[in-house]
Image 1 (cartoon, rainbow, N blue to C red):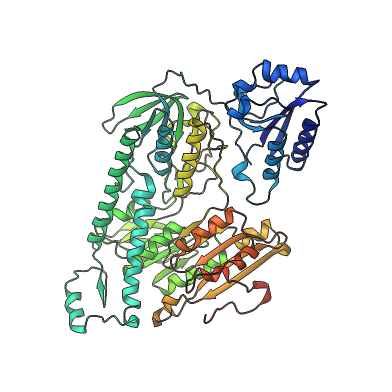
Image 2 (cartoon, rainbow, N blue to C red; image 1 turned 30 degrees about the vertical axis):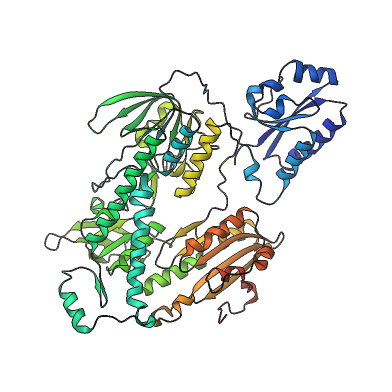
Length: 633
């Protein structure tokens, strides 16, 4: 839980406006003790109050034009710290709220149920000791050149900070390395989405063309084409050339790497291809690729090193596996592949590899996509099985060995079964890439199980050291989250802004062969947080129009679910399983941020014919027992 806001109110005791405002904010602090702390500065009379505020110069030290002309009672502000000082400090003022009317307006916003007021909650951050006249090399040094680190560094530079960014990619155990941009650009979202898109195109060629009147090659042409594939994955209508796919994807990524370096130059951010290690809270040792070291100092540090795939532990021959760090750069088609793990990374890789015609198996220790809505996940599993992905359930690999004759990897599973694969990809979780940072030397608290840094408002236990993105404990591992958190943090540090990152109601999409997007609670989490008696679950099963002609699309429908808190009519979760799921969900995420209700959803006119309209027309409740399948317009 984040620290409460600390609201200070100053005025003289017999002032009616002071008494009324103090009473209202005092009531709020009683109702919301975990969100609001109030500190009173009561003066005996108007003269004493003005002596402190005007003649004493307190208001002139507050960095707000409204404050420097304010002379009435009360004078209200939010502070950076939550400690009660006998004498109020102007240096501790985070935001000037105003007088009586402004304070009541602030209180209404604070108590409004619309968006849980996260955007209105000014973070109470510890003083990190930064001054504009420090003698360090930089105002801010960012450690890590991924999405969050780059965004924070450029934003800080935009506001006048002198910034350096250190980024050094340690090769994967299989030897894969990459350029500036972090996981998402190089070995994550970008190559994954491109290969996923290609696999969907391949499926469409196989499944949809004839139904839409597009002629396939005749049998003679197919035979000739198959003879020319030389072992490449092929279908009766297309051939997959892995080397071409890999080259095009990697060329696109290299173009992004170059653009990021240009962007740093344009923002005057110093880019250093060096590995960082803390010496003290204001000093790091930087090591380049030749092993040469140098010392860099800064007033503030931001750790944004992200995460790396966890190794396949407790498995003999585990060094034979690859990870998502390697799959997109493989020189040759992975061939028959075993994906170990049931995470979204594992299922996404399994999905596009199977879509390209590969023989793919997923080894599942327990359940698919832990943490996501179970009803939707079950549908994903069934769809993938129907589209060629095999699942070995309740097993883990216990031994891997290289076969000399075939070059394949023989895998022995925990149930005693054995099979051989060309490639074994481990996707069994990720850990923060913090082991080499020497965090112990600077007293930065972290979770010893995964290396993730413990923070409040992105600030670590050492006040001048911050963290954003996947390296932060409790942070959704999503690129847009890291970008926005980094930008907002930079504004708070260098632009006197107050807005914290809102980690609530963030959309996400799983790019399995049938895409799944969601925002808010899963049904299981909603039952726990809202309660079974207060939860209404609306469901809808439908056939997307573009799937209606091909016979091969008729086995599985798309599906959507809306979760509503009956006590407030507020939508607490939306789930969509079907084509272009991410594109469908983004707008609903904005609505959820603004307190979307089921009544508002029903009043929204849908766009026809689209899959997204199924969400705004949803009306069948799970509790009614009615058939949720849709038919016709």
